[in-house]
Amino acid sequence: MENKKKLIAGIVGGIVGLALIGAVAYLYINLDDQRKENKAMQELAELDKKEMENEYQQFANQYSEMRMQISNDSIIAQLTAEQEKTEKLLKELKETKTNDAREIARLKKELATVRAILRNYVIEIDSLNRLNHNLTEENSRIKGQYNEATRQIEGLNTERASLSEKVAIAAQLDATGISMQLKNKRGKSTNNTSKCKSVQVNFSIAKNVTAANGTKTFYVRITTPSGTVLSGGGSFAYQNRQLEATMKKTIEYDGQEKSLTLYWNVSQSLMEGTYQVSIFADGNMIGSRSFSFK
Image (tube, rainbow, N blue to C red; front, side, top):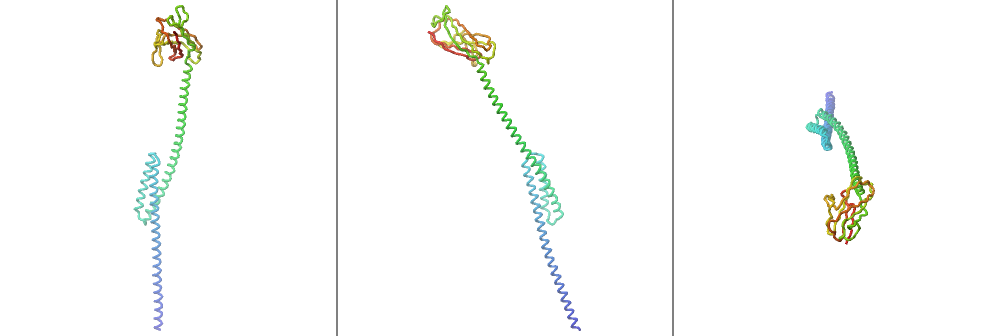
């Protein structure tokens, strides 16, 4: 009987021991699993924190880049303030321990706000850039139109100047049929200079409807073979200088052909040779011809 009790006690003790060993083993396994789980959660938390830090840094960089893309001082100031705020939050995140769940949650919420604000600025700046691009294109178009208008005006001015020059040339009078005759004391024509008592010059003013009508003075300038000018007709302006005239005549010109005859009295004998007769009016030489006498 005594042996039976000892046997039962031994069996019970063995069972209890096995139960204790099993319990210890179970606790050990559970603790090991918990440590592994905690380590995995720690690693995930650190990875999450690192990703948040990268996002904060990326957003701060984007603010800096956007500031370089615009010239609006007001928006630049706003972007600068947001960049400084983002960098401050990034610094706070870096100083926060991974297991500080409350602070991490707060900074994650702040990150979402920064993301939303940045998105709004991206949209606004993109809109401003498109507007600026459109304005630049419009400015280029208007500048092109202005340059084209300027070229047309310059072309018209050149054309007008050319036309004015043509009109001025067309309006210039023309002396035709110029003749020079030597007259003796009886008023007869002679080629003998020693017998000449007067000089007669004839010419016609051609019809010109372009020329201005009104009083016009015609100057006759006779140059002798020696190069001197037969004087007596006063002086007139020609090419910014005053020239001596042999004789002159003033008439009323109406655009129609006019014939003129002028006389010059000889006060001393004329020399033999070639004489040059030139006709002037309105500051222009309108005709010239040479004549030879013995």
